[in-house]
Image (cartoon, rainbow, N blue to C red; front, side, top):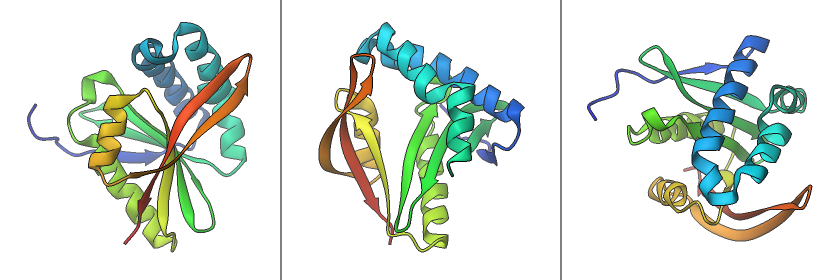
Length: 169
């Protein structure tokens, strides 16, 4: 797998940045989540949470998006929402070609510094309870399960998640 050259984390600021994230999201979600939640729910969730329209609405609501670049390619993206004492890690997704290269570790370090600089005490996220590989990665990075949550997201679908949290020291 070799050493990463240098992960570049760029804040998404233009409509082209958002389009690029939405396109990558659709690809990642189809590949990664279809075996977990099925194609119909993937299509619904991509439209509801990962489309250009949805990302634009989230940006207007205070979310921030960052593109993760490595070797001249967009390897993934992250979306966050700063709260008073905690940082909500809404999204952290990597293209399959870039998994296993410690990019999640580098991105979480970036987010820890982001949160620390703003006086936040923790980073929290939701993760599907059946997404065992991703849960293992988050646990390896120091996140701990806080509780479970089942959220109705409409159209007969639910998100069946663990809530995980990482204290910021």
